[in-house]
Length: 384
Length: 125
Picture 1 (cartoon, one colour):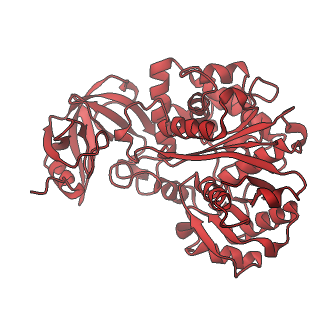
Picture 2 (cartoon, each protein chain N blue to C red):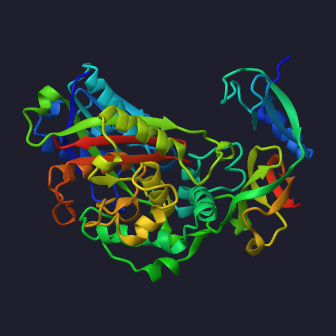
Picture 3 (cartoon, rainbow over the protein chains, first blue to last red):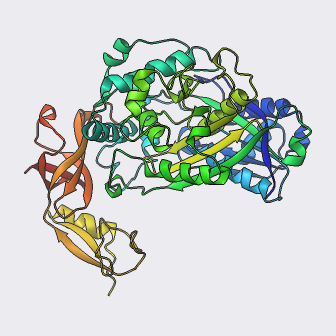
């Protein structure tokens, strides 16, 4: 297999936009292509991620629409959908296509727009990514799914609501350093603890927001990468699944797909959690960050809450997690999130992250979770 | 004989107050239908088995911000219930005060019937 690298990244401001998904994607894609320093005509295919465009914009067949708005209408496109892990799944397939020698230069990313919708409609459309046969009729929501995980983690390990609140405070502190973040404002522990209940024990500040935005990256072969400014190498890109049904999961305090994807990624890269310097992981809810830091092997099962409380995952801590602000503060345009996380790690490994730079970062891990924990992607990137 | 329990059959039975699981004829794995291969041993030899509907709460939440279509019901509780036979099932909690819910609390299955729809639910044991 050939070496694969990321040589260009583009991310729109996250927040509310008055533009379509295709327009948002086109901005991020054009920025990524210009950052890569390649001609737009060098792009051989576009892997485009979007989740609820069918419901929110009445738009299917989004790949060609996005390519048309980008101004490259003749490039082959494919749309990916794996719920919140969508554009990370697209990235993995692009990496495999380049590694296999089929293509040399691919554009990967995604876009999402939901802030044009009423909250109850957006909540309903997101719920479509959980099981429609047992769970939707019971009135489950995504905060509800992670509330079940939180309650199980609290019952098994004694994890506290305050420990979860520390994740929110930390990610808002990081987000305040990111000019692209939806929320660039620090919050206090007390604000989190006193925020409105959404799905007990999760409160408003335990939850990531609804977000509009787009992100894109340029994935290339080693030969192309060698001619570029600052290539970041893809050392692993792995996927794992778990049952779509919450009733099939034997231990709700764990996300098995995270554990399996991480093990596969470490095996591909020939390294372990101790080699990772910086992490962007899927903190759709504060408990999700705690469980992910355990599943990725950074902390023992049951100690992720303690790690958050002690500041080990803060910028300046022993393993900075979500320097971008994470989904919690940077925002979570679901179809764009994976590509945006990859863009952040590329920026960190190029030492171009400004005030949120993790000193000396050489190896970065990206973790993206889809839906009710049924899909997880883990990639490992390195500056050398 | 086709031993696959379809979703339609599962929910028709549930509507009548009966829960049905499937047991693998090779390894004995118990599962909630529908499934073709056994996730444990990949055999394709299920036998339907009745569940008696008793179990304990493995985890629960109180939904306060509901999706469209459930607005008038909120706040309501949803739980994953570990049934006595060893499988779990997710459902709505009925007739238990929200502040009395606890992990480990015994509950018992009953259907929540809304027009044509049948929802899995659990009430006091």
